[in-house]
Length: 416
Image (cartoon, rainbow, N blue to C red):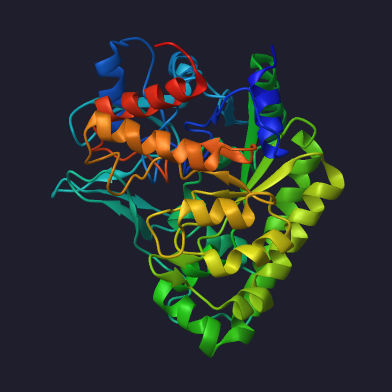
């Protein structure tokens, strides 16, 4: 019998696997909120283990082995086994009163109004979660007032952004000498379990423009200040390439998929025209993908939310093999059309269940019907990894999550 990893690789090669392959929690856009995770564990009668929050901004839980096995998950993060020691985590109460653990480095301060704030090393408050909130919002944008003349201090400025100061685990230790050996041991442990390995390396250029300049400013800059956008993208690319080169050198032989991120769309269309994407961002994306493929046997995946149909041909030309999260509720993102037009070249890593209107609002029976329909559309001939359209949010009923995975089991012919 083929291992889970072999099934994932078959699907990525556009060969029909023995069954639909599944992701839950391998990335920061295919995961589950810690609140929803606690509710799910309670509904399943799972009382052991810990709810450990590896993505502190979005408050996503590290899915434990018991649930990976229960739901037939085939692919996980390279860093999931990085540090399970007790002193690496501490206990907190989530907004609903349930218990979880935050990583030891993350120490936001509790305010009088019940909010929690996180400050950069210089004391600037860069993130805030209101009382009763479920995630942190970025509150500081270093270049909101304009672009600097030089990007000599770009790395420092990136640490004054919430997404830079609080990266998903275990990247908060990336500058430590023990980081790469520990990450390698973690990836080796995943390989030994027989699952495919994903390494999220970020390398966001468009998104970092929004993090630094603020979204409204940066999107206007694409049209009004393209020279400054080019300068920033080039500077970001230099920073990111240093990380990517090290990742490829240290763990590239163990990683099956390198995942990049750059949100490029909104509900009704892309943030920019295809011409602007080709001129400002595609060359950098192409450089990243080419480097991975010249030095490893891994696939490349781009995370981009929104309506990005007009940009997909250029994303394929840039060298991306997979697209996530496949936000099918947006304009021109009909799964039938996407599979027909791009299914031979692109793996759809997502689109398996709509998280905006179905998973959170429908009945379990309606969820199953919806998922079965998506599986029929997207799984034919491989080129598909099942997961939700972005993360499972706090309000999602656990019965609907269980119904979603039961639909996958039914489709795969597994008796429940």
